[in-house]
Amino acid sequence: MIMKKISIILCAFFVTLVSCNDDDDQRSETNLSETEIPSSIKTYVETHFPSNTIDRAVMDTEHNVVTYDIYLSGNVELEFNSDLEIIEIDGRAQLPDSVIPPAILDYVAQNYPDNFITDWDLERDHQQIELDNGLDLEFTMTGEFIRIDG
Image (tube, rainbow, N blue to C red; front, top):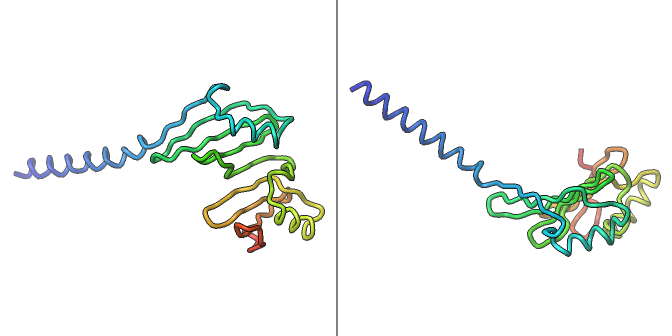
């Protein structure tokens, strides 16, 4: 009787482990060849990062949500959502003004004239940038300053 209870408990434990492990199956990464990269992403890169080349492109699927991670020369990383809209730009050097909303550019120019933007991130309800001095600033979707994110 005790062995039967132990067997049932062990069986339930293993079923729990296996069901928890299914989360790993919900994510996949696919390297894209040059011809598989969506044309709108290529156009974005050519327009805003003309001196950078695409080193690697990855289609990432997690819980049925697709994003595209684009790695450019010069240590620039771009992320696009499933609608092929830019949602994140990470760099080491100054990002082109053309990728930053004008209101945010104006705020940085007025309040941090000796610094430049290295990262931009579009969240669900706000935008965030990082300056070359490591300072993170949050803005509304329309570009109004919210706060320093510390």
